[in-house]
Image (cartoon, rainbow over all chains, first blue to last red; front, side, top):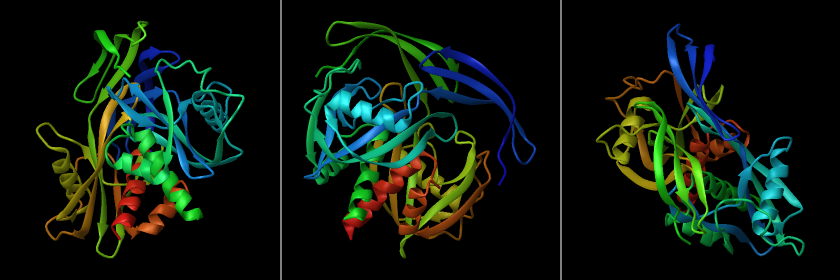
Length: 185
Length: 185
């Protein structure tokens, strides 16, 4: 099962630092060529499932314009230049929620779109998360107003099932974390 | 927590039927305006976690150009015009793998990007899936060569943990299905 060969690549739209869109001319393993296979590149991001010692998940409630509604999500943010994904995860958790943790593990890195690429989501589980006295939920420069809340993991999963988690990135992370935590019991 | 107000919207790039990219001028609840908030629209898709009576998951192994490697994924495809998401799910499962089921349940619909929108992934669980004598894995018009395989659910989750599932869409669905199946036991 061989990879496709990229014969040519050009940019159609460039909006630094947020997005690039373009096309590639590709050759398939069977010899066919596709003249304009679209690709999209947006910024990679890190997302954190932070769980306290008493199994409360740290969640955010905010209006997300891509979803067009208020929903629950997990602390997340773009990986900045020169930053490792786990550093971005620690920073975003602290900046957005005021929580910190000393127990971090990766739950995987996933490509957001199998055809266009788009970006990579890095998912982290932070156990024994605690509210830090140093941080207080300020310092983030997001456009959205964010309400930070906690709820037991099983209630977060019930909220997910009821459709209260609207974004794929958060749904994936919450489900992966539930499996990881249940395996570790 | 109020939604943003869209003051103006324009298209920057149009590649029907695959993709549209544009910007909106939006007004935030606090009165600030953002002149060019990007949006992307690609086609919605349905994805199926099909599990046989003996708890084998129906998987695909293929090269995905957006990921740039061969990886495991779940049967999935675009929702065609005039088609309901669950119809697309049934069709894709049959066309791509030759499997059918009479026991379908939704595991949720999720927006792929909280900022840009992009598209919606509709996730379905198909229980008691069986290989149909009528279908045989042919009939799909995907560019990729697809190998269909089955493995026990716990092995699929182990493969996911080892990084053999590269796409967020499949990782999310597999994790959500594992939780749904374990709750139903």
